[in-house]
Length: 335
Image 1 (cartoon, helix red, strand yellow):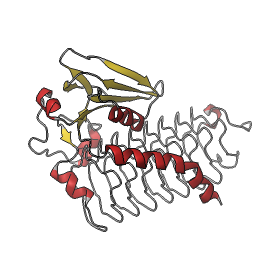
Image 2 (cartoon, one colour; image 1 turned 30 degrees about the vertical axis):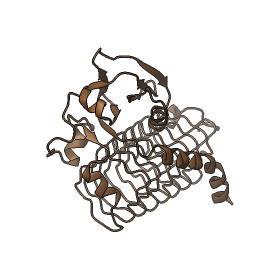
Image 3 (cartoon, helix red, strand yellow; image 1 turned 90 degrees about the vertical axis):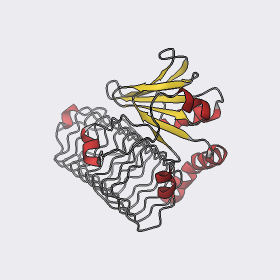
Image 4 (spheres, one colour; image 1 turned 180 degrees about the horizontal axis):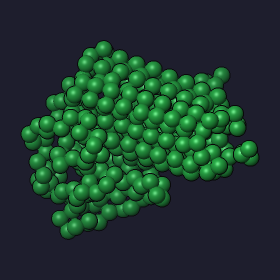
């Protein structure tokens, strides 16, 4: 019954995304980290706050005048900014937690001053983590590595591949091995990663809305700034993973294990965290609004600043948690 209700709730969103993707699948992109710059400076753009990467991308796809978009996420205040650019873009300026995604056209390539897919980077995933996903390279969404990855057979090994910015919409990568694979800025809406395994992969600012991660194990990986809204991640294991600023609105995290993970400023509004294990995790400033946290475990988890408004949780779940007195909007009194 619960699964049926969830499907009925998500069906309109999934149907909208499917119809949309069929209409705009042909759009190609190139991307890099940093803020978008036009020949005139910041140039002309429409600005929108509190949008997701998905919102930003869809609106740019639908607007002929949109040459590309900049997306940035903030921890304090916890918000996002989307800029839909009206002028051809020439480069990206170094900015923290920011990405620039450009429609890949002949005119766009002529305007862009950086080399696109030029040369190979020796950067490995662990070094990429230390740099926070910041890159001097520009990556196109349909280069050969992306095409090959999209056609990956089940149970293959894609460890160590650089798939930054790849178009992997609805790609099927079930049971794939991915140690140290770099997916930063990849477009992976509704991608299927069932029972994948690996360590130290990076998903900085990756679009993973409505993706499937059930029974996957990606220990020590980072999803900082990624959009995982509506993802199906039941029984997902992610020991010491990084989910800072990650959008996980309505995500299914039930029965998952996130030992020692960092969720600082993540948005888990309406997420299903039934029986999820957050032992030792940093949950500072996390939005748990409307989330289901029944039988979840928070032993030695730091919940300072976490907002539990409307969440389904009792004092029992928070036994052993740290800084419970500094959590917000709990529906019971501490002690």
